[in-house]
Length: 151
Image (tube, rainbow, N blue to C red; front, side, top):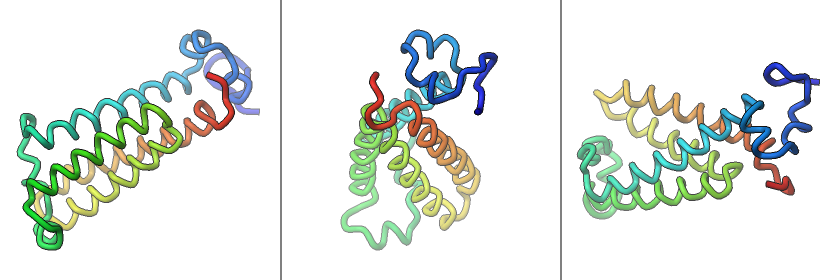
């Protein structure tokens, strides 16, 4: 059986422990919570910013070939992107076992967009790392947000 942290309790047994106990003693659960909070808040904040462009002008990251095939302007596309990101953040907050895969798929699309647009390879690499973190959240959610698990 696998162990977590300094105690010898298996992951499945610890998943049934009280929330307070898991938060205090289970490093994997702590990681799950950190990733869940991050992938809830960040997509919602960045999605909202697609409507205001306070952080950055998001249209600069849209590859020209994508802009050519979508209806409307790059700004219109960013409004749609914003809505999708907000929804993804909400889904992670409510059901991380599904939302994490949604965010990972979305980030994969962003990576493809950025890799096909010269000059943004560093951001593509960062988003690839975020995609791996989202997949990690999905794996942790298979234990800590499993169907039928009492909260």
